[in-house]
Amino acid sequence: MNQSALLRPDWTPATVALMVLGFMVFWPLGLAMLAYIVFGERLKTFKKEANDKADGFFAACRGRHRGFRGPGFGTGNVAFDEWREAELNRLEEERRKLDEMREEFDAYMRELRKAKDKEEFDRFMRERRSGNGGNGGSVPGFPAA
Image 1 (cartoon, helix red, strand yellow):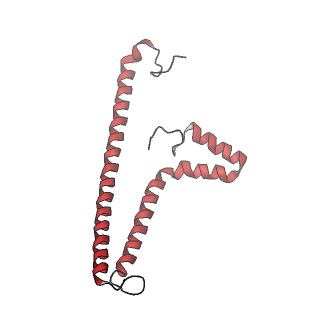
Image 2 (cartoon, helix red, strand yellow; image 1 turned 45 degrees about the horizontal axis):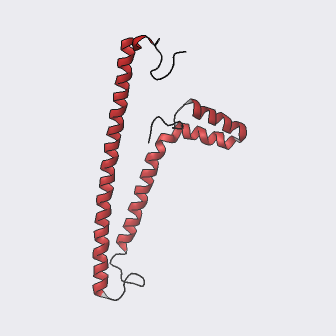
Image 3 (cartoon, one colour; image 1 turned 90 degrees about the horizontal axis):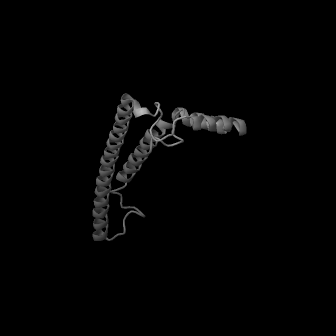
């Protein structure tokens, strides 16, 4: 996620303005915006934890019924049932590998963002220390007031 986004869960002028506007129009909208500002960063981890718990629950349920050959679970054809079980196991292993790759990629992207942020901050500090070469201390890329 781009951390310079206009509506990130932080006390930015845009989020404060939307919160005030929300309270003026319909108070639950303002309250929802306030909750987003305060708790927005926790939503990512909450969603991931909820998905992981749900996946674990359904995997446990599926594991309990794996050996059961009642109606709807077995076809009566032993060769087909064995093949289907092997394919399901193979697909589960592929899914696990893909999940691991996704986690590695997410970690890689976090490191890239961190490096980019550090580089931008270091550049800002270098320009600030150098005195900006006579543009009166204004921000690079913006005209002086």
